[in-house]
Image (tube, rainbow, N blue to C red; front, side):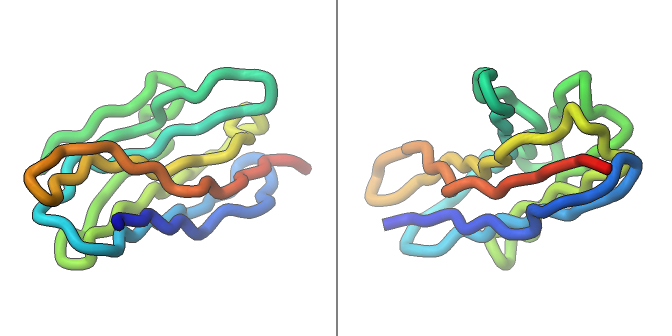
Length: 118
């Protein structure tokens, strides 16, 4: 069984910063890509950023403000969020593609709440 555990959410004022982390645990052969998605109240889940090898991809709304990175040794992915805006308020979910037992499948974390408010 593969699990993704997120941390780092919380309440921050507009213009502030937060760093989200997600670490994979369990038994698997490989894990790629990794990424972050978010879901605001009343809205659909949307892509924030993904990383595959050295390639990164960002939603237009976060380009220049958010940075995704990963630590392959720890099977973890991070999201540095700067210049946060109230519209960034959402539950942020870690996502990963996992290769285990000869099967490739997708895993989601439980989500961490980010609230941007004064």
